[in-house]
Amino acid sequence: MSTFQAPKGTYDLLPPRSATFLAVREAISAPLRNSGYGYVETPGFENVELFSRGVGESTDIVSKEMYTLTTKGGDELALRPEGTASVLRAALQGNLHKLGGLPVKLWYSGSYYRYERAQKGRYRHFSQVGAEAIGAEDPALDAELIILADQAYRTLGLRDFRILLNSLGDKECRPVYREALQSFLRGLDLDADTVRRAEINPLRVLDDKRDEVQKQLVGAPMLRDYLCDACKAYHEEVRALVTAAGVAFEDDEKLVRGLDYYTRTTFEFVHDGLGSQSAVGGGGRYDGLSEMIGGPALPSVGWALGVDRTVLALEAEGIELDIPAATSVFAVALGEAKPTLFGLVTELRRAGVAADISYGGKGLKGAMKDANRSGARFAIVAGDRDLAEGVVQLKDMESGEQSPVAVAEVVEVLRAKLA
Image (tube, rainbow, N blue to C red):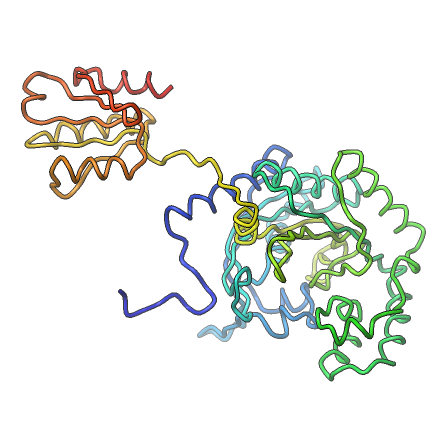
């Protein structure tokens, strides 16, 4: 064992489990790639102010969970705790919004970092796939993203997840609600941190998971009663479009999400098999974020789905993904046959066939164990006598049948059998 361990709250992703994570990323991103979303990749760290402005100083993410550092040059940086602010910053810096054809539709995949109390389903380093549609205010975009996430989860075979949906209003109607909520909260018995949060962003108090806070919130004014006509109409159109697509959801009037930048549509994907860490993903509309970070007005909507949480959801439902073996052909060289078989493996790889070979000078028994572990469909076995006859032995690893094949014909024969 190494002297060093992975830092607390993090994990190493190793085979064979890593194949499931790759398959989940592929399943989530596939519907996006088929819907006009282009891939974007941003640095793992950004200017601290990007997140304090965008995500919000009142959020736990900024106030308690960000990993920050000061560079030798004096710059204040933070490991990215979420993806939206970075993606929007990159789109603005690259002037994607000026190239015509709004919205700019982007998807991303990467690691994110939050200093949280480590527990199953909540890590300090975690993986997400996200999508952002930047520069258009259209209920169809909100609905599209909800539908694409639902499609991704169903493609994976998940069934026990629910979609929660709410509207947070906009800059016209939310201030009126904010004032009413603050008046209500001032009459409660809250700790100093929660009182401070109530003054900065009172909607965040609604998201407090502590029983002693939730009990006091009974009778709190509801945002739906304060929505302006435009926000009501927008929300109803989102609901109608999602319903028309055959996607079920639940209205959740207390759904706030943990980021300050959301406006109007907000949604969350929860899985009942994950206990307290039930959220597997979520998102919403963030029409004012671009201006918050110094850009022009660019109404936008997006989501992020947790890869780690999605894998846990699959395990909770007992779903094993059908992941093909990484190797199709495994070569076992005996005697002096290694150079010839290594050459055949190289040819197979160039022909697009996933091939591997036994290393380390193992005998037949040890090399065949390697072949079995690889999951290969076929093995090619050869020793000095086989090569003297110009053949290798082709073994079907499922049936156990074995037959000689001319060395010159191995690549074509295997390509045909695997087609």
